[in-house]
Image 1 (cartoon, rainbow, N blue to C red):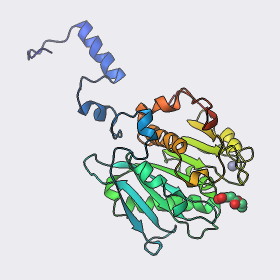
Image 2 (image 1 turned 180 degrees about the horizontal axis):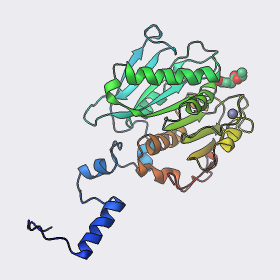
Image 3 (image 1 turned 180 degrees about the vertical axis):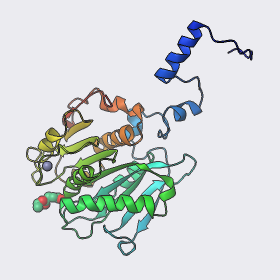
Image 4 (image 1 turned 135 degrees about the vertical axis):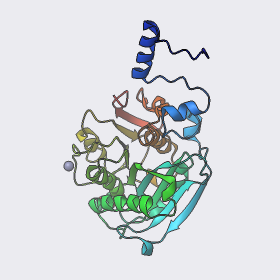
Length: 298
Ligand code: 9J3
Ligand code: ZN
């Protein structure tokens, strides 16, 4: 680049190039600052298949317990968060357990997702028999507590939030997304709900079903939920192979890798993860079926 400081008008070619660069959003930055400048929400190193399958991601994780007595609208829980404050704020996700279950049933997702660069709140519900609509309201109350009152509120970007849940908690995550379109991602896990149709949702949604689920059979739950989402929405349906209703209750690499990719792609706008979502994953020993729209964000 020239260091001259003359103020002559740029030539037509240079002027045209500058105009194109401005429109296309090209930047002349290079080095470590370039990625952050391109996408302010991106966190962590470039992903690989191994990094999204790993038991832990690049961030060390701390946790803090939230007593049910200290909150209203949900039953307390555990917050898992990257220990370091060197990378600025993170997106956040609240996760609800299913019918009769507590946060322990989805606890494995806390450190697994937080270590990739999210604040993760695994919650207890007010009672273990709360129905999906109540679980949806409780997920939203938990996010509000997390971003407004919790001890880690300063570590969170309150505009970049998501919801997950198992079974009736997964049904609750659909309810939460329907109620609050500002949510950036939803991932229902073997979701259960009496409401079979979700055309109101505008949040990018990854529905994970299990081929052997006899409690929330995919034919009457995950599949109609997916099909009823708007066709133009960023949506996907992952049917786990050789899995049951309770597969989301223990550490599962297929659930983890696609959940991480979905949260990164839509909460962080991190297109480095698009490679794991598009082209659509093929059936395998762990994937019975995968449906979705590609590319995302179009
Ligand atoms: O949260 C769940 O596991 C829902 C499945 C269920 O027991 O529904 C029957 C009422
Ligand atoms: Zn409906």
